[in-house]
Image (tube, rainbow over all chains, first blue to last red; front, side, top):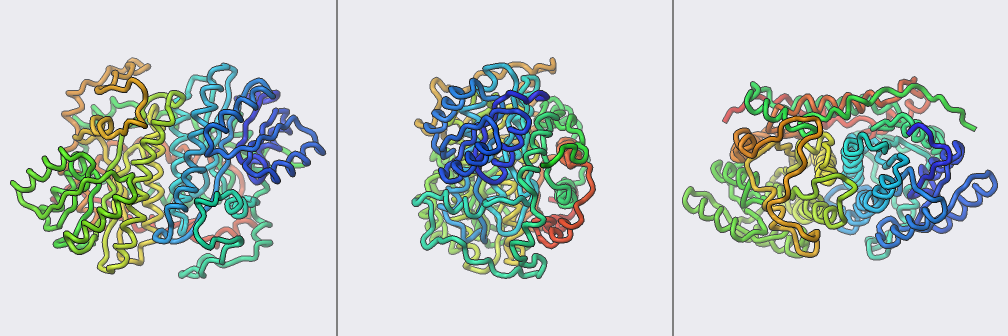
Length: 318
Length: 315
């Protein structure tokens, strides 16, 4: 989608963190923005910012797991701005700990928001985007943990891999419709994911005795990951507005994958090499190969060929 | 897990298709096998097979989305055979094909519930039991070639199969020092009844209106490729017992990834190349890198270095 000015974006989790960064970037480029968020205080704060700094922004209080409310939110967005062109499925929560300690509540909370919340966005808003015919784009926030496994993150890995797969498939489905799809592979970013995760967790999905801030994890066994003061980490974490710039560039370029950080490359390559080494070194079954070749995107998806390399940042940060 | 003789396996979706293929190979190699399935007729059929051909096999009728029943099934398995060593999360459904914008909540909920929720239930219910007895074990989860690359018209299937891929890769990382191996299985075309069983097992409240079996044929491919005939398909699909042999070999070798077909390699490479090409061509932020390189598995997970090259069939 090359021309985004005047178009409307619907951003879940849009009132803080990466969602708010994307909203700010959208406004900068003349888009109208609906920020949907489940926290009223974060919505109010975000609206204070836009009132001061300008921008056609409309706030909607929405829990993405509530399907009825989601439909009403989409109706409200259309009533306000006419059409929705860009859907940013960004609302997400974090979780962590050893797999054997994860409860059904931990799983249900994260799957409900990180996967089903995105599916809800597709069911409700994708048909609306396709219907108006003016083109559009769908971005869903995955993570570097959607491409490689990370210790202590079984639920997060599960949900973020799922989103990568969902967006890659969707991008193929939408070829030729004027609507693109991207997976945002976000690296470390300045956000309040931990706090918002805690604040948004409904009572019935809270484990007993859960408090904020959580007790610090035990020191790593291998001495690799040193504990670092939060302030120091914040110095290196990405400003969500930069993430927003990268997302808009990804939309304009119609990238399948939008990476924010180049530093994870080696990790992805190592993972891929393991996948390939695991393929049995055996002579091909010729007859089978010929038929599998006829299976289209199940065997080989040419979609991937169109992904090109974005250059260095070509925008100005304020 | 090198010595599987006498060990106990718990296989969901174990009474037909890939699950039954795995059960046959396990039984033949001296394992005790609990086959768990929600269709009583296929459980009966499978049991008739084992009665004739031998094997210590115990059937349990279970819907993997039913958490209370799952706990009871695990209890029953332990009562029958003492302990559970190997968990094979194989129950899965293939519904929900079609353009993404036509997919309904019922499509999403049905597949997510079985393909992801059912595996979660297995992990939550059985992993602590395997850890507790301390004799080691292995967990295998059935993904698909669709768990490694996107494929048009399979949004829900790809979502769920990518999900279990991520889940197993993380689990392998977590359990590597606990004497429990973890693998994710990528079956290519296999002889089974996934379409029929997906239809039969679908509960009423998650059925779309007017759904019937067999489904309407999909429209012919846009690019003029000839439509595959079912006969073509049968000729090339793998015998699930071969799949089972590959799974058992991988458990012994402790492979993280189990591929059944080498014919998808180019597809995986195309996907990987795309995601690497998408990394912006910009210099590394050195100050950021100095700190991020200490992030452990967030930045680089050496579980992947442990995957060894797999050889030709040796069974």
